[in-house]
Image (cartoon, rainbow, N blue to C red):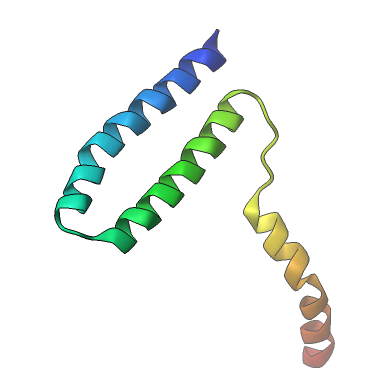
Length: 80
């Protein structure tokens, strides 16, 4: 029951946010900003809903650490 309440809260908050921001961006003809807003808010909504429904969402810092782990070894060997 709590998962559904959190998902409902995310959906309602997102709708209110979009109702406030999208008309203002459209009126000012800020099309690039509107596109970025829609993409980022959509991604945020998706991740928040998945997390509230119990999905395991990986941490982005884990990807960064995995990407730079070979470089870490090279830098450590240079500094020793």
